[in-house]
Image (cartoon, rainbow, N blue to C red; front, side, top):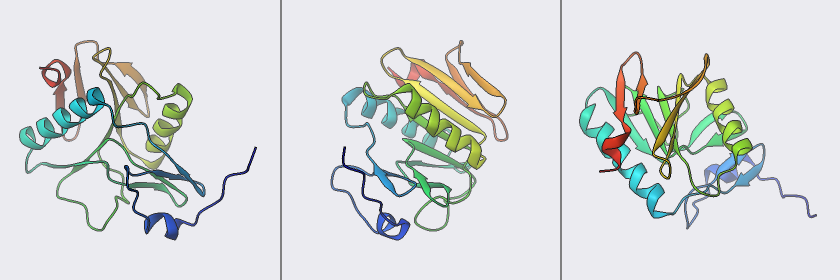
Length: 168
C-alpha cells in the first residue's frame, strides 16, 4: 500500500477541484460522496426551503468549507449560520447547524467521524437526512435521536424542517 501524500493547509485552501470540493483531514485530501440525483434533489430542496422560510434570520450555504480544527476542514452539504453571511472565504466560527445528506456510498464510521468533528467544533445541531428512507436524525452534544414526527428542529433560533415537504 502506498502511503498518502500529505498536503499543507495552504495548498488545500488554494486548490480548486474540478468535480466538487474535497475535505482536508490532517494533511490528507478526502473525496466526498455526492453527485447523485436523490442527493442533489434533497440538498436543493432543503437549501431553498431554509433560505425562503428563514430569510433575514439565518444565512444558508451549500458546500462551504468549515474549519473544525487547525488541520481539519469539512464540507457539509449545507451550513446554516445564525445571523448574516459569514465574513471571509470559509466558515471559521461554529454555525448553528450543518446538514449532511446521505449518499449510497457513505460509511457509518466516516459519517460518525464527521459528526464528532462538527460537535467537537461547537456546532450545536447536526442533521443527517436520508433521501432513500426519507428519515432524518438530529445530533447534538446531548445525544442523537430520529425525528420521529418527520420534522428536524433547532433551538435559539428555532428552525423547523418538515422532511415530507422536501420530497414533494
